[in-house]
Length: 371
Image (cartoon, rainbow, N blue to C red; front, side, top):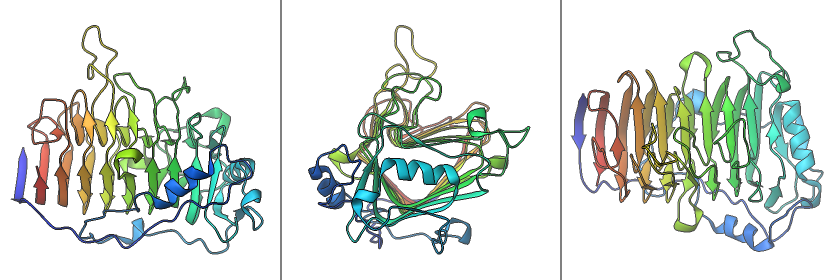
């Protein structure tokens, strides 16, 4: 069922007001990348919709306070902002900020930072617009899992617990690769199960995860089991944004989830790729995958809500060049307003251009360009 109040062509969206500077010519002590990478990130696409008329951001999706952080990475120089210092700060929870000097900095990890479920109810990682976290082409960057005993069980209902509440803000995540992860696949840069997740004013560049598989994905972010089905918030953030900055995975070139709802505001998804082949379930003789160029949603009774968001130039081999939104019981709602979907390519089985979903699943379109 489609509820369409107004679908128009050629909407002019307003200009994003937040630009993150996340690189510099000064190299971190643990940086495994060339200084040229810092310049690329600094000059990369800004956070947020570059064309967009912005949508109102509710209080629950506003940035967290970074005042009086419990833990500070670095002691005033880029060299002091090491991967080890970042990993240790994240494990202690609370508000984490950075003191890396006056210039932007790149911190390259050789293993993911992990959230401990018993460290604090709220974990806020704030890069201040000057920190790029890199996986160096070999590692995931951040991991949270309320059902992982190694990170401590804090509830007998680990798949439905309120904490930790994780906020990632004013950061760039780049060059992460989770392909070597055998137990928790997908989630090239960030993998989350349980608690709550918010992503604010952040950028995701050149992250990758497994190139094949019927039901794994999320080159930038993969999410499961949010508390009481409450949504993940993504605000004023960019996934890809230019041809050489796109993310890629078997499914969900940017985002992937199972049974999770999302509220996405004033964001940009561009040049991401779902590179698997064969769909889900996988066609005979194929490895499966290739759906959701930008966003891959699977599960039951979930909602994907987009407002003030641009989705363009994403690509798939199977279904949903922009969005794959498939509810197994055909429930849930896809809601898009004040947004543009254009020039997304590849695939088949389209309810609307760029969108693969069951025709009897509810969709609401208001002031949307689809071309």
